[in-house]
Length: 80
Image 1 (cartoon, rainbow, N blue to C red):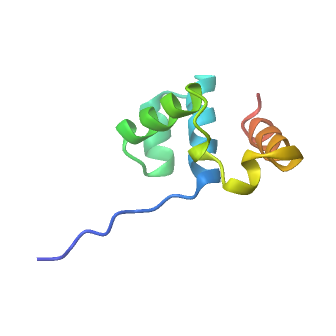
Image 2 (cartoon, one colour; image 1 turned 90 degrees about the vertical axis):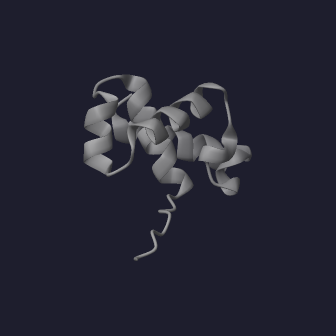
Image 3 (tube, one colour; image 1 turned 90 degrees about the horizontal axis):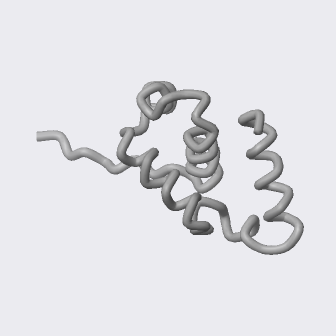
């Protein structure tokens, strides 16, 4: 039997997908198909973002101007 390896996603990837889910321009099902991620995972990332959890962003982006820059770039990337 082949063992399944859990896929690890980067913090910027999680933030990008969560922000796209928040904009509601695409359904969670569409995002899941586009990014190859289970829709329950996208929903968790979206809820984390809404609660202000910073674990979706890399540590360098959580503080100071670097964090604002990354967040602005992510919003710009998804068109918000």
